[in-house]
Length: 423
Image 1 (tube, helix red, strand yellow):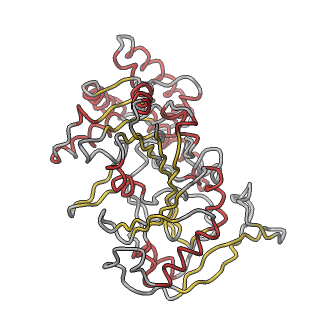
Image 2: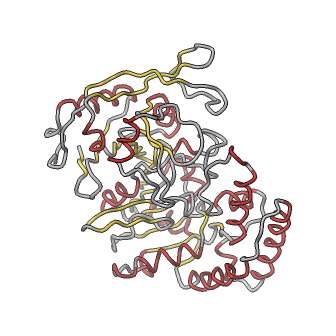
Image 3: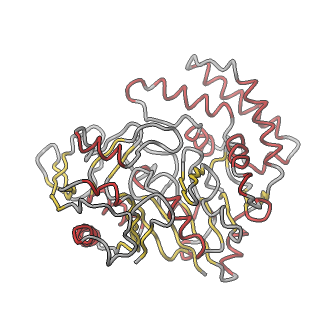
């Protein structure tokens, strides 16, 4: 029985899609356990870039089962568009994609509510992708939401109308216009009919049967650990549990099913949208990281804020997730720097120096304490093994391993699946 977990350890956008694609051949099943279409997992191979939003990143391997778990919130319209974009690649969705009947549905009014809530926050807005994720999880917790399995029952239109009427009252309160809702609903219900043609089931049975039969499962996380609704930089977080613990509730598996926990991080840090970011750079180095790293959101196209690596934050999420192996992405982006800084501690407002992630980094000032390391300042295009790496990159890897107490067993030196060095 083998279930491994792959997680982002920062504020998302760490490169999870690429790593799932690389690791996928080792597994029989790849399963998404939380999040929604605000996730954008980018895979690049054969000269083509693919961005997946809700579909697991093992979908390009026809021998692998892919599961959208109950912890995911599903937008049927985006799902339909995503499937249609993948049509040229001869993927047999009927044989290798399953959707949990317990996954919550994102309604057109959820997207409107998302925009209304964000607008009401003014300059304190979260930086939502406006995909309706938060309001959908709100309805789930409030026991109001509709699930994928509901669409097969004759009373679904009544349930839908009842919930939409509640949403309209909220939109009226915020004085938010929903004149275009009728057109959006038409597209939504067409997408529901399309969704009905796929494998919709109690996927917790499918996954547990796979495990019982000795098959291997990879649980694929979305967003990043620092966006976890409980342990992230609250309230500038996502609306689900992005940690290892979320696998159990998001797929319906027991904690003792989990073995390896792969933690993915960039060789530096990025963040999209609002919220605290202790190591954020506002100088030429930050601009260089953004430019060379092509740091623009896969889902929204928004520019990502960039900064140096943050060890206290990484130590925190490594601890909470029980990370057993680390994967470092985008080492090539740092190739142009003669010197590289790493935040090893924080200085708090009262002068305290700490290596712990503070309760409040939103309203309290947190200054990074840096150490400076030698950069490798050379092109990594032809690097194909750990031994072939420049010494300063090896030193950077060793430095991080010593700080975190976990080995780095994969280093990405470019966007293509072939530019992945395994130890």
